[in-house]
Image (cartoon, rainbow, N blue to C red):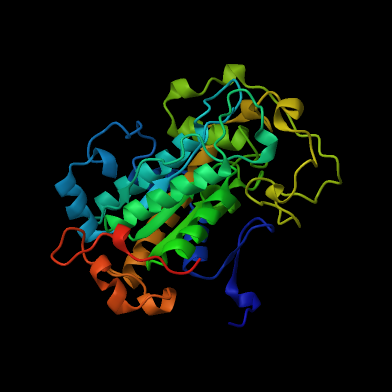
Length: 369
């Protein structure tokens, strides 16, 4: 495809440009909305709402079996939030990343339910999470070895696939994207199963809406950790008791090298290197930022999170629709195009679970690595 200046959608901020595509137009529409229209859009997803993990009919695991099956027959996409237990300062909770992703996917479920095509969501398989090296030793942070986290994810992927959920989207906020990517690829190396498998840092997916100072109702500082950005999202989506701004502390990382080399959590500035592509270029967390904060959370407001949360809910809803348009319920990409298996070999495993002739994937002969 040839790109020209006509293939870009400009905004009132010279740093923010969207591709003239379905996704770019979706983002531009949200960018141009008034605050009142953003509030109306959030009503579509019933945001804010109380947490749903203990409510019936919200997650696969708290929905009676026949309803799970009926829902899957109409929409066999499953969204899986992942998280961690990590010190996020004295002013908020150590499961912030978990609750943030759950709040988003719960909103998407509510929105798709209203449209008559409810997506399924599954419990978080990583309540403790894999972690980068510099988190080591931080009080309040509980770390799983990366190999353990990867194997948990692979087991969850396989179990969901065996239950007919062969279109899987993992939503992440925590600094463990490489572990999710490793699990995705190892799952396919190991089993070579057709399906749609995606992992996503939700904040990167809508990074434009965290650009510092771009709009009056947006954050004024870059997205890093337990800061204005994350705390604003918590204030919008969490029970109010889970944020106490009176205890908010301000802290910053002392980088050893020149500014402009390493980007922040959302890669806002398109710098040469991601934060995760190096270690020991700043002190480890409990020595450099023992506050558990990188930024200024005291400046947080729920208002500042509305536009990015509206954007991610709309984008995830679009992803679900796009997947089902290309591959309706019960279908997957062509077996012989996306794996080294044959259609004949895989056919019994692709049947609806429990249907006559169906075979469990746990009996499938392994090939490849």
